Amino acid sequence: MTKFSDLNLDPKVLKAVEEAGYETPTPIQAGAIPPALAGRDVLGIAQTGTGKTASFTLPMITLLAKGRARARMPRSLVLCPTRELAAQVAENFDTYTKHLKLTKALLIGGVSFKEQEQLIDRGVDVLIATPGRLLDHFERGKLLLTGVQIMVVDEADRMLDMGFIPDIERIFSLTPFTRQTLFFSATMAPEIERITNTFLSAPERIEVARQATTSENIKQGVVMFKASRRDREGSEKRRLLRAMIDAEGEKCKNAIIFCNRKTDVDVTAKSLKKYGYDAAPIHGDLDQSQRMRTLDGFREGTVRFLVASDVAARGLDIPDVSHVFNFDVPGHAEDYVHRIGRTGRAGKKGTTLMICTPRDEKAFDAIERLVQQEIPRIENPLGNTASETDAKGDDTPKPEKKSRGSRSRSKKPEAEKAPEPKADEAQAQPQEKPGKRDDKPKSDRNRGRGGRGRDDKVVGMGDHMPSFIALSFDERRAG
Ligand code: AMP
Image 1 (spheres, rainbow, N blue to C red):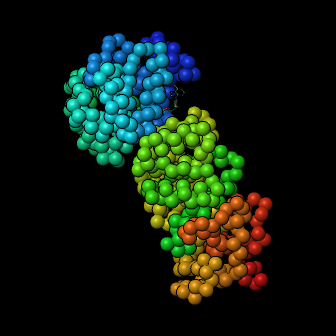
Image 2 (image 1 turned 180 degrees about the vertical axis):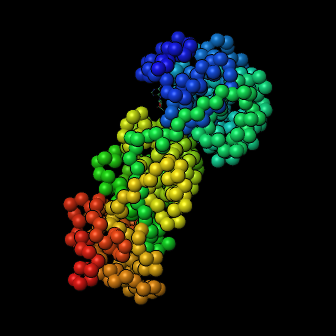
Image 3 (image 1 turned 45 degrees about the vertical axis):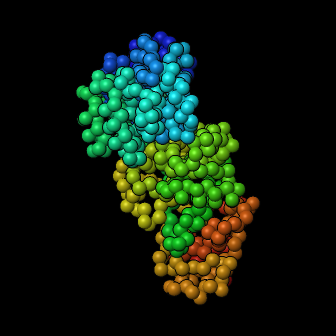
């Protein structure tokens, strides 16, 4: 097996790697470091969690160890799609360059131009940047890219999702033709293929296995859920999410909860907070300092639930996440792989649970195809709600508004006429106080309706399961 000491890294880099506690290079490192050190272009098809950051950082700093930076002319450039990822790469640089005298600057939005300009003026060996901010600096005339010897593009597929490809092409064209390029992407979409064909020269291609197909230490599950009514889907999903968290109990040390849309990130975080969970949102519209604060809180454990969008969470290296919840089924199957890869890292065990509504079934099928396995269906911890119920019986009024029951448009299954105390949600979260209308704890009106759900065991209720919940449909009617 290859060892780091076999890789021809600068002895000072090797020392820092040893001090970081790494002995054996990961497959992407073993594959990428030798050609990178030989000055070749590299095309790494790998996602975060595989050790890809070190696979470009270590050869880069070994090559840069010789030579000096000139004012305004960085010697190398690392482009990252998000500020967080750029900050993380910068941290990696600090770790591995601690015995070298290399300088770096981090150019990301939300930080003052002036400070960044001062650093560039002094001359930097490594410039780590998001594309937009880099071009802003360039256009202000404060930066020349003609001294770039090594350029790294990290998470190119996310750059594509975020619309950065024209910026990347422009940046490529501003750097010397003779530069060395190290290019990383989790997937090879046609557009990414085109870019690599245009800007890379005979690259060494290294592809490492997808995490989702290899990671056996991530326990997966999905709750098939159908809201009682379309306009209640959001609040019912939030309620289900809380029940899923509760059902995991102490096993759920902390979690990242993914939503597809920014607005849902905000609403879900707010709702969780209201119900007494330590939650905070993270998405691209929040300012940089706030995002950093939230992330630090999550790393330190003061924030237990990080509610995130894909873009904000991409590439984040938070080593110790016990759970990932997919509040929404991601629209791109690849994102499922990225999302669940936030847990079960570095050999630790992780759990990932998802809520799938009937509308998500196509996307869900695509995920199962991609990960080449069936994701185990788990019971709805609130009892089987409408996952297998009749869609027609969905116009149930909230119990606290019984008088409006007459507006019900469709035939309701008999079970819904059973008395429905509000106890269930209060049991799940005794300290909860209902707040805004959409998140009001509601009775579990669908429990026991139709389908195979009737006789299913109810889980996630602790010792406080109200007795009516255990009754079957027919017994309740009889009572
Ligand atoms: P990355 O894919 O770059 O986000 O790295 C994922 C995690 O793996 C980070 O926490 C790294 O510190 C860690 N890591 C990187 N290289 C190694 C290695 N050779 N052995 C063990 N852990 C590593």
